[in-house]
Length: 453
Image 1 (spheres, rainbow, N blue to C red):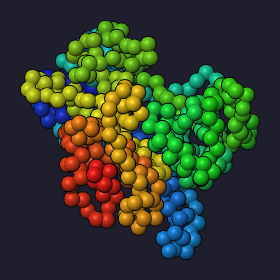
Image 2 (image 1 turned 90 degrees about the vertical axis):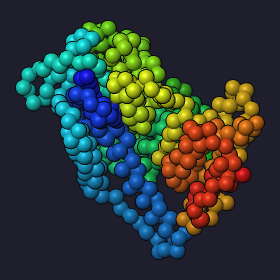
Image 3 (image 1 turned 120 degrees about the vertical axis):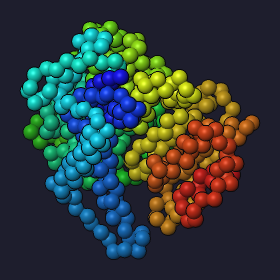
Image 4 (image 1 turned 60 degrees about the horizontal axis):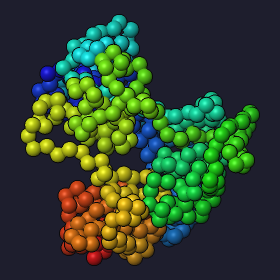
C-alpha cells in the first residue's frame, strides 16, 4: 500500500506516521516546513508570543504578590529569535520522526495528474517526479483571507502571517476581526504595549461563543484600555508613511500606526489538480468529506483546514490518524468516528477561554433541557494564591441522567483544565463522577468538582 500525502501539517504528519507504523509505504510532499502552517505561521508562533505577553502582564501585577513594581521591556529581536528557534526545533523533531519510520519526504509542491497519479515538483530543481498512489491524502491547509478593499504591504497593513513578530511593535494597532484569531492578537499586542482598537462587525466579540464568555473577555479588554468598535464592518484602508485609517460601513473610522487583518482563511485547494482526479470542491473551495475523510473519489482523502471541518490542529491530527487507519483497512474492526461536536477548543487570551461540547446558548436555541452550574474563580483558593481570580467554570449536564454534555471555562489555565471536561463529554461521564474525584488541593481543578456538585 502506497500512501502519498500532499501537505505536511498536523493531518499529514499524523497520517504518515500512523500509516508507516501499520506497514504502508508513505511519501510526504511539503513545500515549506514539516509541521505546516500550525508550526510556521499560526498556532505555535502566536502562542510563543502570547506566552511572552503573559509574562509581561504578570510582571506588571507583581505588587499584588508582594513584590516591588516591575517594568519589563520587550526585546523584539530576542523574541523573534525565540519564535524561530521553537519553529526550527519542532520541524527538526518531526522530520526525524518521519524519516526514522521510513517515510520519504519530498521538499516541494505536489498535484494530482489523475486519480492514482501524483506529480511532485521538488524545490531542489531536480525536475518533476511522478508517483503512483493507492491512496492520496490532501492536507494543504489554508491561508489568510484578504478582501478586495485591503492592500497588504507587510509594513503597516499586515496579515497574521506577517506578525510573528511584526517589523516593529505597533504603537497603535487596529485589529479587523473579532473571532478567535482576532482576540488573541488583541490580547498579545496589548500585553506587549500597543494601544489596540478592535473592529467588531457584530454586537459581541467571539460571535460563535457563549455570550457570557464573550462578555467576560470584553470586560477584560475594556479594563485594559482596548477600544471596541461594535457593529462596524471595515470596508476600506487608507495609509500614508506614518499611519493608517480603517473606514467602516457606518461612517466611523479607526486610526492607528498599523492594521492587522484577522478575517478568516481560504482553503489552499488551488493547483492541486483536483479536476484531473475528479475530486469535487464546494463553492468555498473546500473538499467535502465523509466521516472517513474521503472525498467523492473514495481513495482520495482530505483533512485539516482543506476539509472544511473544525479548523483546529488537534482535529486535523485526529483526522490524519483516522485516514491512515481507513487506508490500512482497520475501519473494518470496531471503529469510533470523530465526533466534531465533542472537540475541545481554547482561546489564548488573558484570561484564557476554553470550551467543549454543548454550550448553554446552543442548548436554549435547540429547546433542549439542561442543567447549568457555575463556580467563580474567586471562590478557588489556588486562584486567590496566584493573584488572578478572574473567570469561572461552567458545566452543562442532562438533568435526567446527570451526564456531562459540555462546559466552558474562563480563567487561568483554562486550556489545560478543559481536558477534564472533554474526557467527561467523550466518555459520557456523569457530574457525580467529577464531583467525587479527589483532585489536588489547592488547585484550579477543584473548581471543576465544585461545579459538578
